[in-house]
Structures are given as C-alpha cells and as structure tokens.
Length: 203
Ligand SMILES: Nc1nc2c(ncn2[C@@H]2O[C@H](COP(=O)(O)OP(=O)(O)OP(=O)(O)O)[C@@H](O)[C@H]2O)c(=O)[nH]1
Ligand SMILES: [Mg+2]
Image (cartoon, rainbow, N blue to C red):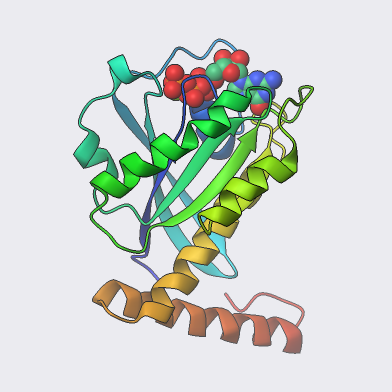
C-alpha cells in the first residue's frame, strides 16, 4: 500500500539524545559532538512494518527553551510522539510531565500515540526501569529503553510506535486516514497468512 505517511515527534529535555536517536535510526550513525538543536528540523525515512511500507517524517526540536520556535507547526498533525529521557538524569524523566502538557496544549489530533524512551542505557543508570515504566503506564504510553550510541533498541522503538499508530487509527475508523490504516491492518493479516503458507515474500 502506497501513500501511508506518519508524522513522528521527538520530545524531551536538552541533551537527552533526541537528535542522536534520529541519526541512529535514519543513518545508523552516532555523533558525540552533536550541536544542540536550534528551532525545528525533520528527517524522512521509509520503513516496512509487517509488510506495509510507511513513510515517516521524524521531527526534532530544541530541548532548550531559548531555541524552541514554531511550536504549533511542530505539533500540528502529529500521529506519534516519542518522549525521550536520559536514564542517567532523573530530572529528565520528571520533566516529561511538562513536555506532555505541551503536547496536549498544541496537538491538533486527538489520538496521538505516545511512547517513552529511556536513552543512554550504555551508561550507569540513575533511573530504574520501573520508574520510567510507571510514568508510561500512568499516561497509557508504550515504554522502551535504548542507546543511540550503540544503536541498541532504536529500530524497535520506531517499529512499535508505527504498529501502534496503525492499530489505533484502524480501531477509531472515523476519518479517511483511519480507513486507510484499517486497510493496512487487513493487508498485514493477509501478509502474515501468506508467510505461514509460503516461506517467501509475496512481493
Ligand atoms: N552515552 C551516551 N551518550 C549519548 C547517547 N545519546 C546521546 N548522547 C550524548 O548526549 C549528547 C546530547 O545528544 P543530542 O542528541 O544532541 O541531544 P538532544 O536531545 O538532541 O539535545 P537538544 O538538541 O539540545 O534538545 C550527545 O552529544 C552525546 O554525547 C547515548 O545513547 N549514550
Ligand atoms: Mg537535538
């Protein structure tokens, strides 16, 4: 199915690793000297989830307030949001409450699918997984941990988020775009059935 596009946001404090997560996912690279993000930036990446091709626009913004700009256009029409915190800095998890409020204040869609990502698990942790999970559970979000440095868990985050967006949109069945997502779910089921019946890909 062509023409499926999702807008994904990365949100969180400065230096939690948002830009490096995007870099790891889109280019397989890590930059320890990554300059702080100023304003808003985005990258495009095509992925395939359960046989369905999806074009992602992945939006990055400045964690430092003094550099943030164009906030409403950043949040507009987003399908999914990844709330990033640093597993070595407890305050970055606490601050996700503020970032969540900002999303709520600016979103133009009701059903933004949200995921919490605890980044920098390659370093000694100062936040237990259970603490991150508790925040995610409280707000009905998915929860994952990752290391942009080691490219550990990064692909999974985007794949699970996209899968959840497809499922959520299909179950709502209220708009043209959700109908197209429903079609994707049907296609995924057919694809899985085909894989069970045959060992090779149908495409
Ligand atoms: N050890 C480790 N360090 C990381 C990881 N991800 C990012 N960093 C470090 O954290 C610094 C900040 O990363 P960025 O990706 O620039 O953080 P950001 O969230 O985009 O920050 P702003 O643009 O200011 O909002 C980087 O220069 C890296 O040194 C990781 O997975 N592990
Ligand atoms: Mg950045």
